[in-house]
Amino acid sequence: MRVHRVKRWAATAAATLLALAPAGAAGAQESHGPERHGCRAVTSLGRLAGVAQDGRCAFLGVPYAAAPTGANRFRPPQPAAPWRGTLRAEEAKPGCPQDLSAGGDGVEDCLHLNIWAPGTGGRHKPVMVFLHGGAFQLDSAEEAVFDGGRLAVRGDAVVVNLDYRLGILGWTELGALDPAYAGSGNNGLRDELAALEWVHRHIAAFGGDPADVTVFGQSAGAVSISAMLAGDHPERLFRRAVVQSGPGYLVHTAAAARRTAGHVFATGGIHTVADLDRLTTRQVLDLQEQAQGGLSGPSAAVFFGPWIDGSLIPGPVVERVAAGSARHVDVMTGSTENETDFWALFNPSVLDLPLSAYRTFPAVLADRKQRMYDHYAANRPGLAEGRVVNAMLTDQTERVPTLRLAEAQSHWRPTYVYQFDWHVPYVTGLPAAQNLGAAHTLELPFLFGGLDLHRFPRGARTVAEQGPALTRLSDRMMGAWADFARGGEPGWPRYTPDSRATRIWDLEPSVRYAPRDDERALWDDYGFPDLDL
Image (cartoon, rainbow, N blue to C red; front, side):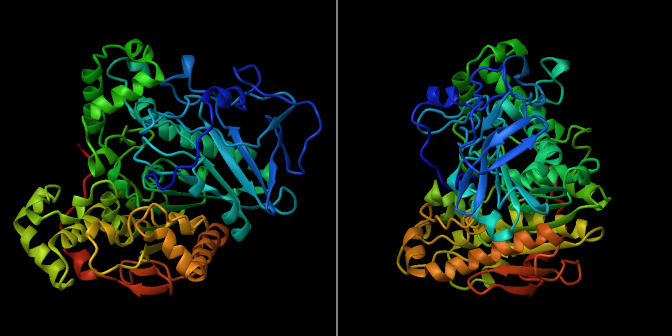
């Protein structure tokens, strides 16, 4: 989900005019003059000139697929065309269209990626490809928090991030309108796979090793990776995967995909693909907002997403992983200690949720709801009811499903689990929404090294007060992710069903074995079915 918004380009028209599109496309930019920087690369598509940034090279706004516009709208991504001359890859491009308070942002010609490399010469380095979150309808690779430069230098690795289609444009199944568009509800996932294909083919030109790729993602990006792990031969595109707060059960069922699409069509009076294709970008975003009917928080976060289509995603994620679909992929996965505190940033009443209003609690466990609450409450003496309910919600939505994925994969390949526990220190007397725990997304400013915590109450002040300690934590995390990408070992014991070894990320990182295992076991009888809205 959204963590930080950088200042958008001053004028969308100007940004479009300067877009680094393939030769022959609208807005294409070429140069036959001398490169202005020492950061250069030569791929089979053409030459690129990047920009030097504090000891690394950045290649920004590189097209990995053709623009998903015109005849390509609502179609799988098509290959990027070669360009003439030298592509000036010096500025990130706007992200894909999304509905923001400012009236919408992004452009449909958005299938670009950014590359940071410690240098483009010498031995090939491990490659780390990041997929951003945002409920499959927000965020972009240009967000300041996702700048991969610090991680590239700290990890001596090539770091890549990318944009993929969002919302209706990338995650709505149109097969019911026209069989020729069957599978279009996973086009956003196809975009991500196309970017990984591009990396596999071209990253050597930037100093990366195409045989040593790690894909890592958070929230929606992690759900995408979970879906990939359930596919056929994911090792074809990456050797290792890091799944951060995005368990596989959030992949939608086919029924959910059809139901969501049908609701979108009914809301907009859409009867054919042509009806939808006639809508402008702004109109598509308006329809998207109307179809969600004012949903917010967790409900909106799962409206869009990848779905089990029987081919790209053959079956339920954990079931497929347990059967060995990712038997050649090393996996690291984890969550934050207080995932659902994140929603208090938008609705403070979330942390006051009484047990009686906990309606997402699994119906099949209804007869033990009170007993489970009492168990959680006994482990948290003095904690308000809403806080206890949120501890249960965090386990239901993130922690326990994450451990199910880890357990399934641990039978096949080295698997590692972490939990991010650090949070802005609590202040006595403040409302619950001003005392957030280790909420969803909080690890990202540490993982990328920017330490921008302004989004969280008292975050900026805490960075000013605890800067050196937080920098050490960030450095350790970047080192662990890079070590995992380089050799498959992040620096703590493997997770097994017997040991449940877990790295706890706090000011003083530690390893705990089977943390809060009594609470985890309370969910043993629940199968966490794939999402069916």
